[in-house]
Image (cartoon, rainbow, N blue to C red; front, side):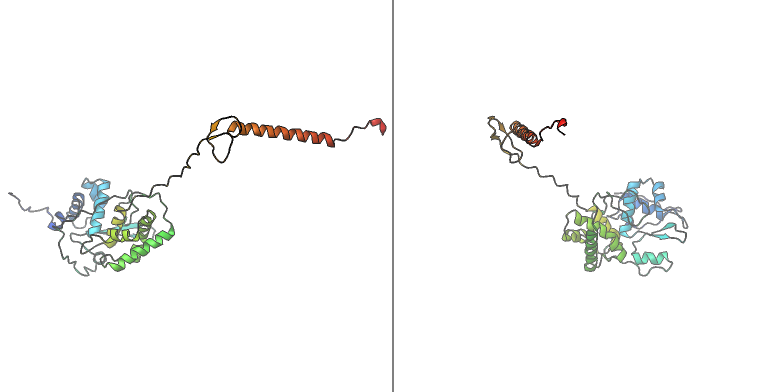
Length: 302
């Protein structure tokens, strides 16, 4: 293999090989990150605008941004100002940062501690953490599930899902969730329970195959809960009663019919018996009326 490369004299960016060869970042994520890192100092271009400039479509951009957040290359915060308007602050870095380090840089305090990676991302034989994408939010930290659920999660299951997420956070130090993280992840875990998943299945979905260092536990957990969510259970079919066996009519018509309930005569015999009973009842009522009718008295008698 022969290679020829000339170092550019100007208009170049220094990108670590760890980014270019990252096994868990898609091509769109690498392009989005390197494009942002190539912008001049002082440029205030959001990631969504960079994606448009780089020719990355909305679906691919949402997936790429989620990957960069999960790997610690992108951090963002939403704040509400005194006038009630919301603003989003984004931080893009060429090295993975924890949430504390990112907040320190945002506030101008410098890094609390340089992240140390035991094993570099380059060369790790792991699949990319990609999955389904949400539909609507480009600049929000917490997105709704990628496919809006038609299932309404009861509050009791949401509370139980929060307890499961908190228990996972206490067991595995790589998944340290804040109270707000648990609050946002609880509805997803509750929907798992609503779809028939067990507590053990939720734990395995959150903890299986974790890297040695997780830079954004909440984003990784949310990605897994959405991407691995089981299918919704099908609606139970209504039980159809077995048809009654054929039987001979007891009305004397020598017909064979299929009863619906416990009837012993066919429809025609039942109708004929009902008409006969009605005529007998009318005859009795007429006789009774004639019996109690007073005798006519001539008017002249008074």
